[in-house]
Image (cartoon, rainbow, N blue to C red; front, top):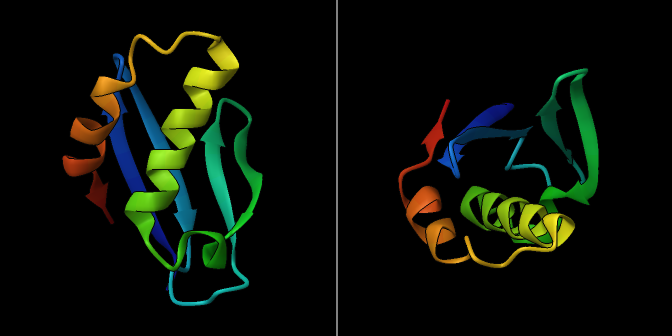
Length: 83
């Protein structure tokens, strides 16, 4: 069953979706253009939605070239919602 996970961080909402039971299931992120593949599978995160979201947020910091928001990641992951 596909689940969507949502986390709020840095004033934005981040969403990922996948069937976290199936190891080969691709993980997708919501963008302005709809759902896009992340290039990762559920197995890459040991079937752990929190690990997938943590990496998504970490990658956003890397892409922005700014690590000043790193402390907010764990709080966002702890408060994320799974639907």
